[in-house]
Length: 363
Image (spheres, one colour):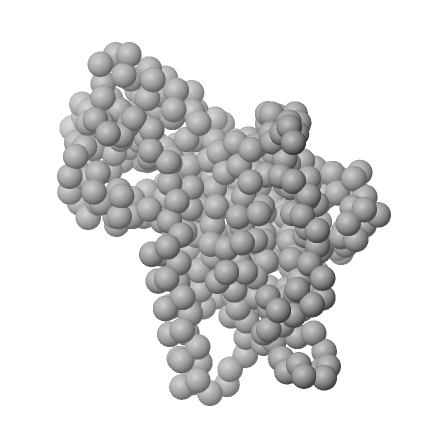
């Protein structure tokens, strides 16, 4: 069968991929710059074709708690929002991590703090990767750099969420959400039958039937010793994810003397920076983390023995740079370059910063 190629926004690709993947339910609330996710669902009316539930909740708080309920029954459920909306979801996300429930959360980032701007940003790295809610938990975090990856990461996000019984996040930015590109949509997958859900999710709360255990979904544990056992088990799971699920992309790194580290739309701009730099004789490479957690610390640690310095490029004041610095352990200089307020840097600005901060640092 020939591939089905469409021209669409990144936000639209999220919705189309979810329908085709057989997602059971979407619960969300509109906020710029991700409102097209919900709008596309409403236009496509998947409840008439696949049986998918689509509901605009009263608020982001309501939406994440609906996700909590749906995930507790073993269903594939998801939500989407943008920065301040995801802030409102943090309590529910922490609860789901504590209850070990799989779900998918899409965050199309805008500038902050507060209401900030509707322009693009990458300033939710701390909020998502470090865990904006309370407690010792981690979120599997995928950072798309194209509309194609927006579509692809829906399936991957659910796969990882159910494999590890943990919330997964697609952490995009306003540029990726709003830009239009060609995308190959995934084939249609039927929604799972009740028997398939029972088989895949024996932990789910699906009522008491003959031969089936009654499960209680909760993140509450009043016995400190038992809570410590739970948390140690969570940490073991996170270590397993860190071993098996790290994803990254290398661009002209094999002979690089200097390295850019960037994710999402920033990484796309940095690809052009690498081309311009190499045309000038500067042996520059780019490492793009695809999973922001688990973070590709090991490969960055290895490159610290090869390159003379690294420039972390982000649309924020400097957040991912902390993980890069931890990875290289001071073996090479690591500097940051970013723009704030929704202003997107140019390749020339990044190259100038590389020369000024890394290649010929001023004293």
